[in-house]
Image (cartoon, rainbow, N blue to C red; front, side, top):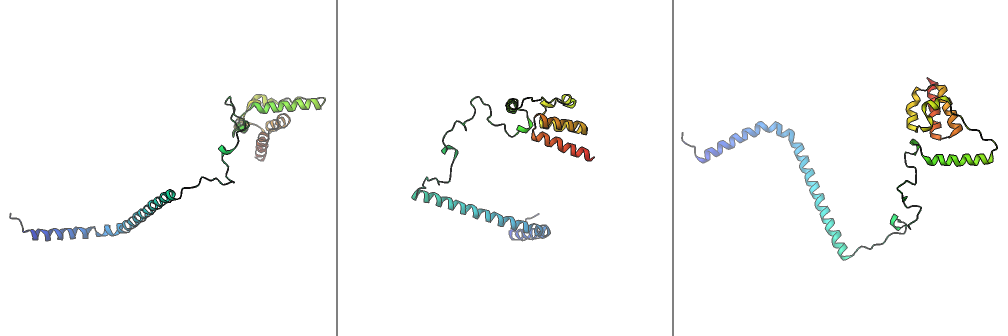
Length: 193
């Protein structure tokens, strides 16, 4: 078979391409709005980047002409500006100076020391200080060593009488507000059932 002249091949190729593009037209029309939006977004971001580059170059040029002053406003204070106090220094032995954010959920020796000092002061002012005896449920639960979270987990299995005994013991012995609140709220909920 002989080859057709160049012009004929060109016209046939253009016709086939036109037919193919006409067949793709419904799909192309659907994609056209997204194409336009993404192109516009690309142009806007490119302009913003170019403007930011110009501003950075302008800042560096102005800093070279007018160097910035290292002045600190009188109202601004920073940690390194404060005098070194021994009270703010961390403990030398690595021990925390405060109880931390989980103080209510753990037993600490510091609270027992304070309670011991308060008990000693009470003994000196009152002639006969009576020791509070724990109820049987306190011994069964090992209440003295429970944290607030551990006590909360065990409250579901206790009766109202046991809860009231624990609350009375807590109020008489240690009087820790979170424990008292937890027990009182549980008594209220258990009584309502």
